[in-house]
Image (cartoon, rainbow, N blue to C red; front, side, top):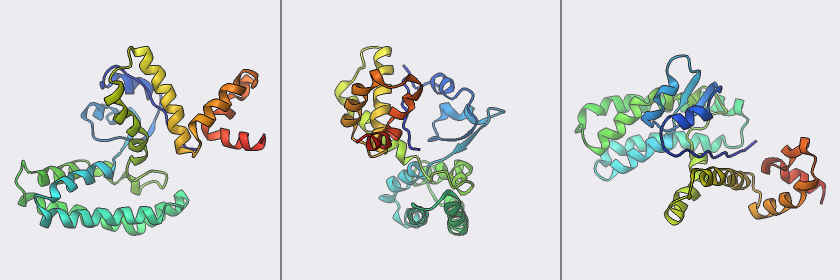
Length: 235
């Protein structure tokens, strides 16, 4: 089931995500934003999952200034993504087995390489920053090797959020916190439609037409990830 859910908070502080995640325990994939570090400490019950998309960006940024050091690292990261592409249609169990057979060895080589070159780089250079980020986040970046349901990065979230990032330059303000919360709900529906290959306008039009007479105890049928089957059965 592919569901995209946006939440609105007035600031980027920890309080909003903490409330949203209240009661949840398990894996949580997030970029290494320092505000969220507390989520992964103590008995909170959250296990940090890193994302190689962000780590790879640091190496790509540093490639121009130090190709001899950054090129081999990017080659190894590329091999990790080649495994992911190969396993795209696999079951979680099959994907995990392939990762443990191929990706684990690549990760071991990459870690060894980064440890080797870290002392050769100027501390404040882009390449040193790339190596430092990867090694500091290594435990979280290797988490995808433990569970076939985990992704190697949070690219799906970034793609779902791209419209918001682009749109901010146009709408600038929501007008109020209430407007922000309403926008989060609507954007959740739209992003989930796109993720489920459902045309958003067709979904909105059909749901708004039928919702008044639809049984309240079956509203879940109208959610984007269920709607396509419902519409097909009634076509």
